[in-house]
Each structure stands twice: as structure tokens, then as C-alpha cells.
Image 1 (cartoon, rainbow, N blue to C red):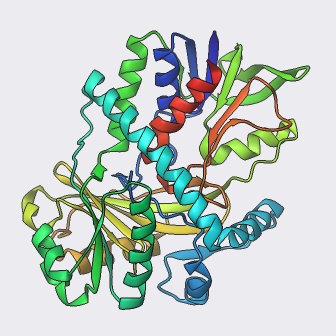
Image 2 (image 1 turned 180 degrees about the vertical axis):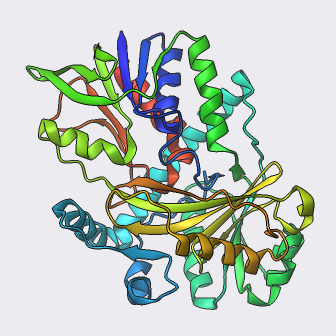
Length: 402
């Protein structure tokens, strides 16, 4: 069977890989290069066990600060776009305990499947992607935030996650580079099984693997139109000509919803703009963490990738603009200098911005869409967990097609 995958980010490439393993003929189309969207500069953390949904009951308590504080990691820029407002309303509706609990369970199940699929891929292909089973510390700077995190930890423990609440002393023992932060740490959640890797290197490695497996890759190829024939998606018109297939997989991330509106489909997917910087820390390696670290107050993640440190964060609900904001990049640098003084220096920051495709609940859309073409599978809406969930959702798409 010929399957056409739209999108060459980590989700699209993982989908193509899973489909090729099932024996399908696969074509991948993307307007740019592999990993050029939300994948290339993402946070680098593979959070298989710590998957607290973005839509969380705590949002209501944090909302005034998130909306109005000058130092807020969240920024809302209202658009003349009903999709933005509908997404925001549905997001707030999802910020309740029962939805968060249900979403957590579903994300953990998908993440567990993804961990297994990623590990199998790595054992089979031996990709050079700076992979490390480094563990993860999520830091909290006050007792109430820590108490809420411990409550979430107990919920996730019931679902099979191995996690523990640790003191500031234990944090520094696990990650000596946090010594400067000792007085500011009220406690942390430690997940020893978490991992980190370079998503761009993973994408680049998968391109080589897919080509060797005979997958056709149409990169830097513009997608112009989706062509329907009855209730089936018959072809995709591109700058390289029409591509026909038996089945199609929509894995274009934040671009999925605008493209599918041409078919009358309304996906609850909207972009959350995020930023990252990547620092060369080889000259002062001891100042940078080896363990993955999330500063919950700043909403910033730190992931070691070989001799580099990836620092990522922010969430802007501001449409489809991908321009770099000097203020946000400066904020990431300031956070790095505060949490890990001495590891920034005057090194190049390698700034990046990308659009994370988010659903209101945080659950990706995987499978057929009611009312959509019967040969079109969705694999989009992974939010900030695209790298974490990519190989699990890819397996689910391949299983559904089989």
C-alpha cells in the first residue's frame, strides 16, 4: 500500500519509519528540510514519565500572573482569528481535575509505547543524536507549588511511574551544577528514567535511514492543494507535481489545521510559539547540568546534549508568526545565567523559535477524523511533547492502517 506522509518533522519522519517497517511504500512531503518546524530546536527532553498536561487546574490560580506579569513565560497576542479564541475557551474548559487526570493517563500510556518504539529504533539504527538516559529534576521554589507537584506525582505513581520527591540537598547531590540554586529550591520531583537527545540530529539520522529503506522524500517541496475524489483524498498537488497515494498521514504540526480547512475540517489545533537557545559548554562543562532540569517557576527546561546545553521555554498564543523575539531570547539567557552561572559566558546563543501544535487538552490527534476523508490519518497536535510521543503515535498510525 502506498502511504503519503505530509510533514518531515519528528512526528512525520517517525510515522514514515513505522510505516516502512510494516512494508508499505512511503512518500514524505515537506515544504522545508527535515526537522525545520517545531522539531529542530525543541527542548530535547524525552519526558516519558513526567507528562503533566498543559491544561491543568492550577492554571486558574496562575492565570492573573500568566496574563499580566512582565516576567510571565506566557504571552497572549489576540488575533482576528476565531480559531484562536475557540482554542482558548476549550483550553480553559479542560483545566479541571477530571480532564487533567484522564489526559495524564492517556499521555502516559502513549509515552510508554513511544519509549519502547524509540528504544527499538535506536537499537536497530544506532543514530548519532546525543542520546543520554540522564534522569530529570523538576524544581519548585515554594511549598505550595511543591505540594501540588507531589499530588501529581502520586497520581502518576498509580499509573506506573517511578518518581520521588527530593530535598534541595538531594537535588545538588544528583546535579552538582545546581549548588548555586540550593537556597532557592523548596524541593523537586526526580524521575530517574527520563532521557534527552537532539531532535534535529534524530530527524537527520532518520532521513538517511528512510532513504536506505527506499522511502521517497520530497523535501523543500511546497504543498499547494489537497485533491478529493468522492470521500477519499486522492492526491496532493505540490511544486514537484501531483502525488497520489492509497492513504495519507497528516503530520504537518501547526500547519495541519489551516491546510485541512480547505476540506471543511476543523481541527482543535493551534500553535503555541516557543523559543530555545543552544550553548556550547565544552569550555566549562562542570557549570552545566548533566541531569535534565525543569525550572517550574520560570517554565524553562535545560537538557544536556553532548557538549551543548539546550535551554527552551515560553508559550506565546500569538498566531503563526515565527519571528525571533530578542526579549524572549534575553529571558532564556538570563534564566540560564541565574540557574547555572558560568555556563553561558560569551558563547553564541544559537536562538530559535518554533510553533508547537497544541490541542486544548494536550492529547494529540491520532487516527481518523469524523467527517474527514476515510483514507486520511491524523498525527498532529502533540504540543511540547512531540519528540516524546512521536514514535508511539507513529506506531498507532501504522497499526490503524494495518
